[in-house]
Figure 1 (cartoon, rainbow, N blue to C red):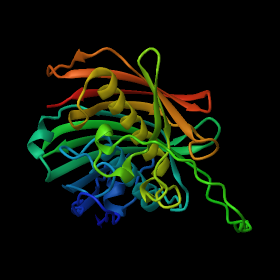
Figure 2 (tube, helix red, strand yellow):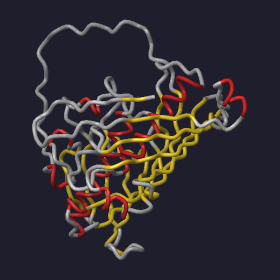
Figure 3 (cartoon, rainbow, N blue to C red):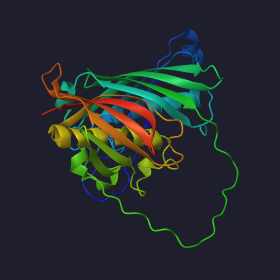
Length: 322
């Protein structure tokens, strides 16, 4: 299978065209090999990518773009393929991300990769059934850059109910309330190049070295629009917490945004992520330490807030990768 993707047209720095992508099913039983069927409890695939790819925002990081979004995007795309083609789950059934864990094991290969190269991801999917009867998929992945192990990840997805077929209710035209102005960090303050990919608004610093910011993407960016992108809500949460950690690391711990690399991210996704009052996140950095390679590192605990009510916790670690 070959999949070609395209970047959205936009001003600013040019984005490279996505390379070729191949997904290969790896049969693990004679039935799978001869009949093309898949055992729901154990589906195995290999994803092969030419880099760079053009899916935003993980190619908008400047020096080294292949960050945690690449790992989660690879898992989600293969999970969707397996669910639709092999597990006979209708394509219109959304796959809601319930939990994600990503660990970048070795960034040395990333240094050698520079801006182009080859990535291979080995994936294993399991069809799950919850106690309440809900079904989903668990995915485990190992990513190799230029043949060297680069990252591992896991993704838990739930099969959401199919969208309703009721016709939308017409809203009469009338005077619209003015959109309140928002203050956004500069793209370079959160490790991005394109202002349209900045998803934080109104950052404010509080006592105890903490940063709170609203999660508010640009309305014109389809990457974070649930109507245009199935992964939009999960992608927004991961990107917003990454940006909040980078901003806090730079403002509160003296890190340089262009050299910040997210090497660990782990969290549960709120079930009502795309409904209700917009979320904000409160970021509290830990002390600066050294990782196994001697790089400055700082761990963060990020609390998701809906209004003043906590609705989830994310853990992440950044390193200063010069």
